[in-house]
Length: 367
Image 1 (cartoon, one colour):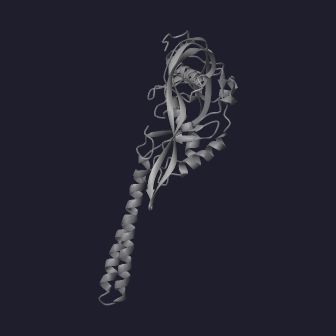
Image 2 (image 1 turned 45 degrees about the vertical axis):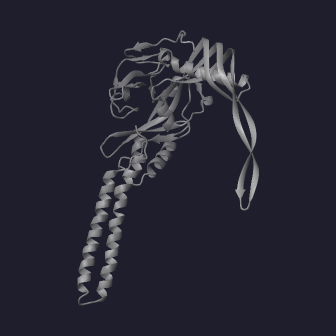
Image 3 (image 1 turned 135 degrees about the vertical axis):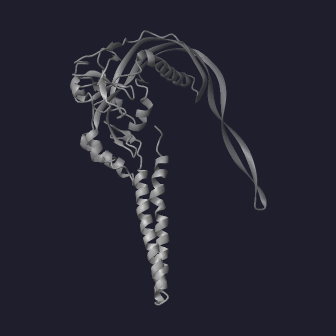
């Protein structure tokens, strides 16, 4: 694999500005997550849309001076976001008070996050082992009842053969992460239809926060090269009419590179858990897909367990008192037994709200 790094688009440090990328944007950062955004002046001192744990403050940022080429516009309205948040919060039985659709909607911030699309010519030599499926027919005998039976078994195997060759191809729009948490955001928001991207224009980003790439081209190039090699490997396998490929290696030159910055839309909001820690929630601005950690309230679980347990204790005491009356009024013994059974049932039921938040929270992804 060629380790030569081709010429890459330059970046520069922007100390401060009233206008960037043709819009009234200035660089700002968060001291907690250390992520940079381009925001309007009114959004300074507001919670960071990435982590919600810090505030956005003016600071320098390293970025490409030219504006992005493409963006996927928002196609989901705030009312659509409300419906997604209602569903997101409604599935949590004992939830924190702050896990509320209306509250999160008020905090929702439109955000554009970046990724790279890389075009490149790839020319070089490759070698690999190519795998070809073939079938082997055999017989299998088994004893059933009082006789032996034979049945045919067809097994698919792979024949591996060495191959080498040359490649001279052009690849367009190879997707490459532009931010270090790309995979996390992609997991929360789901896929985007990038074919619906339009040319960047400043009115599209009015009122939105724009994430600044923390993987500029010089940092993202190894990922771009790996994805270009992966695309080349798929074509080499296809050219060899093989079904499988392994131990692929490529020594190539990467020429005529063109890096396109594509902006993807999402809404970022948050709620606070029992400890007051902000938990970020993301909504895909194109599809409405929603993701984030949904924590139940263990505090509410213990509260309801205590209430139900207290009722169980009161019923049990009543059962004892009624049973004492059985000495002078024998039917009261039956009532006491019934109340005792009810008390035991309530005591068992008190375990449910105490244990459910713990079990629910264990199933949530770690962040």
